[in-house]
Length: 233
Image (cartoon, rainbow, N blue to C red; front, top):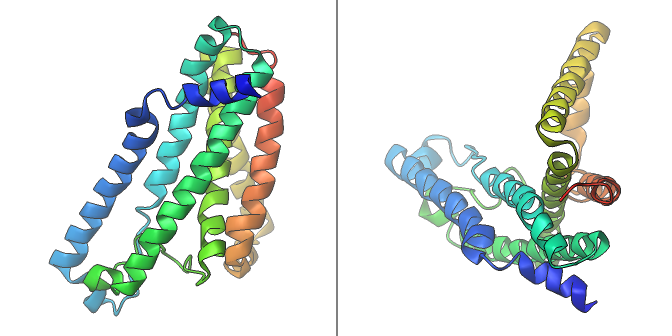
């Protein structure tokens, strides 16, 4: 257990990178949105219906941070004679703690945003598109599970790079592009775009923020562990 905690602490050696950069980016996005909403009077013009996806920048940045957590820290951990299992469990522990921490912080920010009527300008930045579920404990879960899925996605990408290098990254990008593209072709061929759009619209907040992220995180966690066992430091 001590070696797992040691592996987890490695990821906090540079908090300015692992924590500071994600917050710097999302707060920059928040400041830009405040400027747009304030100068353009967007909230009043749209009667509060305008949405922003600025919060997604935080999730994307955390994904990138965990890519670096594997590509940069994995060789260092092997140099310290940690096992691949210890490194994986330590990194997964860091992902879990990070997700919960971000979930709590975002819940607090969403509460302030709600109490101030969107910072006085009907801006729903921290809880957009119905993410405000009204229950603080559930709100933490709604934020944390997608964050956990992003962290494991980052770990997975990092493992692909360490195991297969640049060709692996190209293959991953090509495979993802083909998967999305062929899905679009199939939907067009079957003429079911309307049904597909309706299915997406019928998904509940719980489906999008709890059920789906749990499934994705579990699948990526298993694949990442299997890949890391044969990765080259």
